[in-house]
Image (tube, rainbow, N blue to C red; front, side, top):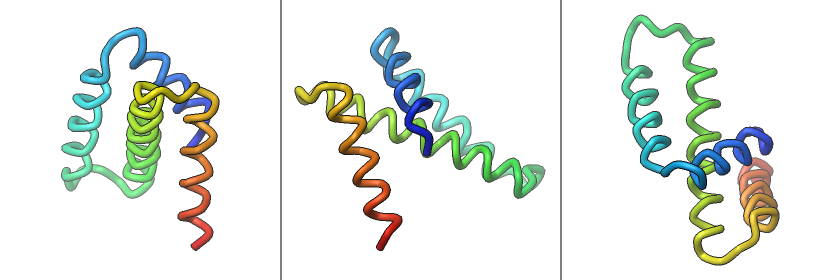
Length: 85
C-alpha cells in the first residue's frame, strides 16, 4: 500500500462518490478470476485493490469526524501493525 495513492484516491472520493471506487473494485476483482491474467498482473491488480480498499477506509474515518492526516496515519499504523505480527 502506498499512502500517496490512498490520499489521491480519497480526494477522488471526496470530489465524486465512493461508488466509482466500489465499481472499479468489483471490475478488478472480476478480472482476477480470468485464467488469462498472469501472476505479475495479479500482483499489480492486488496492489491497486489494496489501495482502493484503504482509501475507502480512510474516507469512512474522515466521515466519522477524523482529520484526513489523522485518518491516514491511523490506517497505516494498523496496516503496518498487522504486517509485523
